[in-house]
View 1: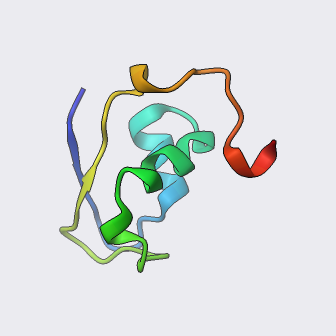
View 2: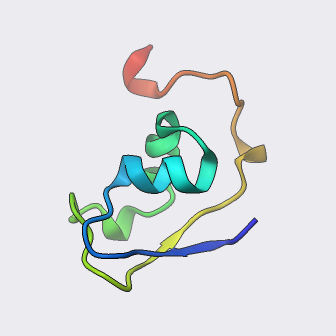
Length: 67
């Protein structure tokens, strides 16, 4: 799995989570690994987003805001 994702103009957190992890529900995991990028709601082109492997989180767990 790639460790970085290079954005294209118009990418959003949920879109990147869907592309990288196959499901939008991992957007909170993605955001928690990219605090320095939380200023973006819609990304410009060519931003490197850290995309660590999911083995660090339970695949069936709910995002913290859904508990």
